[in-house]
Length: 209
Image (cartoon, rainbow, N blue to C red):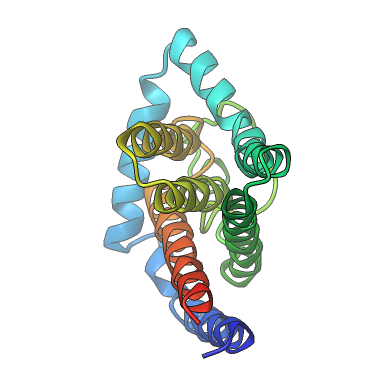
């Protein structure tokens, strides 16, 4: 299967997911088990914040964009200056996985239109009020996609461990700050990891031809 065919398959799967997503929005009804669990977690987090933790998770959350940009940029720079073709290809793989994952999540957000936690429940107090919709989390999707991609490109413990800690911290920060429910970040993380795995499979098949 060619790269173009793989991309068509990915887009078809995304389209199917978006169609199903619209019809599945009832799971966020205020009486649903998922919503009740989400609310309990978010209320607990908002009632047990500390100034030090809030400062830390604000910093972590704001580092998401920089991390997603610096990882592939660093690989690209290393590949160019070191004349390393594989490193340049890894830079493209990591960047494309993160960008495509985040872009797809934005589309899904506008299908679900799930309000941010602090807009749906007055007991959930956000550290700051972000715009847009909650489901799924773009931060979780892009950070996990980047972490998964770099870990597959360089499957060493000293790459995997920091990548996992970084992505997990960003994902948790979105709940801690009151901006995303657990189901938002879980779905975003799964989508981000799935995107990276899919495109890793694509590139391996292309390279083996």
